[in-house]
Length: 164
Ligand SMILES: [Zn+2]
Image (cartoon, rainbow, N blue to C red; front, side, top):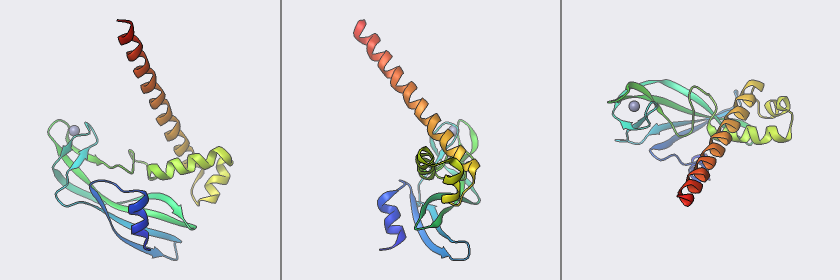
């Protein structure tokens, strides 16, 4: 079984394809190239609407969940989208958020481990920095609060509609 088969099984991103995976033995990492599907449109990071590609930025590296002790990096050239509303904006990708170098899946994984271990231990165990563990915990807490606020809003809306 190949790594790309495993990635497609556990973390598929609509509109994107895992192209090649290679082992970098000296860096103790696995690099996986990602590309957008042909004729797919990038999502504007300003308004979350699809738009035509303006150009591509240099390749970025996103840390994915470590695998068998190897750091896994997704390599991707972000598209800039020519958005009718926002102008030229960098696309939003489903695995990343803002300028973070960690994938969302990796942030969830690190934050989960940071519940059980000291954050410094978590960073050492996964060959990453203490700051990235902090970013991961902040991301999950922020996501949790947005979910709680959404749930409260939905609960209030249903309470109001049932009392009217
Ligand atoms: Zn836009």
